[in-house]
Image 1 (cartoon, one colour):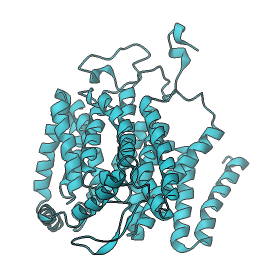
Image 2 (spheres, one colour):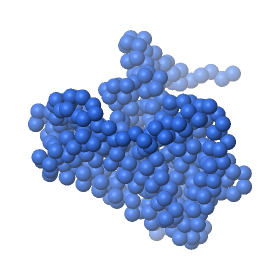
Image 3 (spheres, helix red, strand yellow):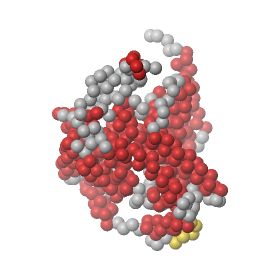
Image 4 (tube, helix red, strand yellow):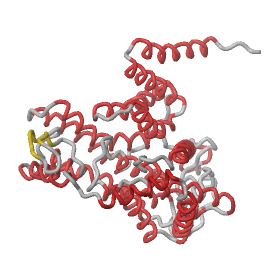
Length: 462
């Protein structure tokens, strides 16, 4: 047996110490959280494509295991993986210097503007005397959008990384969904809803047993969305599927119809299970449930916006001691159950434009591709833009940053086949496969997904 190199052993010892010390020194929950963050950061240095799958799924799992119910803990648990991912990217840039970064896209510039505007708005909110914790919570709700956008564009910047992240995400939520599909009282469906439209596109592109397996997987996720008892998720997923039917070509429509038929059969097969019947009964309750205190709460936020429509009442604004019909006397704000009310109350019309502008720029690109994955992600973006009128999740609408990034990335990797049926160019610059049906690269790359000047035409070589 060959001896382990000293450098490898030292690195392993340092990594083990970095994980073990916080768990031993800090209080139980805090120690576990910090140790998990350090462990994630070390893993992200090696596998940067894992940042978003682990960040999205891990935050939800950690919240459930720790029984997080208050906003503070919930926000912290969803922020720690993002911080670990950002730190890992910095370490990779230091240890593995690469070529000069490409010129940022217009949507990336707009997202950077949103991040700067959020920081300025936070300073403005503090200057107005808003409570620091409220400013932090409101800033998180907005900053999470550009954060997810840039994490996606930096960690999924090659087709291989995008494919690896997709496999990790789909396999993990498939196992979780299969285990919990019949669990009474389970709500949500967000993780499943994000997977349904892109899988529908892949179903339309595949044949034989591969299509059958994708139909079964997509049907499982559709069943979870239907049983979610969450109207915001129903709206987002339903709008996305409708847009795909209206804007999609024959490939997309074939995938949509096949997966919907499979979901109907699957729901019929599992409807005999007592847990599924219990979850089904919750759908009736959700449909009959009124808006409760959400409308009076939104009215308070709109009053704050009306008082200062241009800039809003400042990031972190709150209206103290308000009687909300159907609830109690409480402080209203800075977060509301309607996300757009939160934006208007905290940031005003300028803030609304800052949030919508970078998202809207990607929709034009995605909706123009009638048979590709960009259409699926653009349709999902439209769905969640509509759902944001009625939902303001505690961890923010991070999908409004992730989905535009995936729209732009898949559009960059998309073959001309997605632009109306033309066959892709078979030149060396276009023929590198990615493992995704119907996706090739639009630039000369090596099998590892990196730019290779030797494959470029002579006049284009650096």
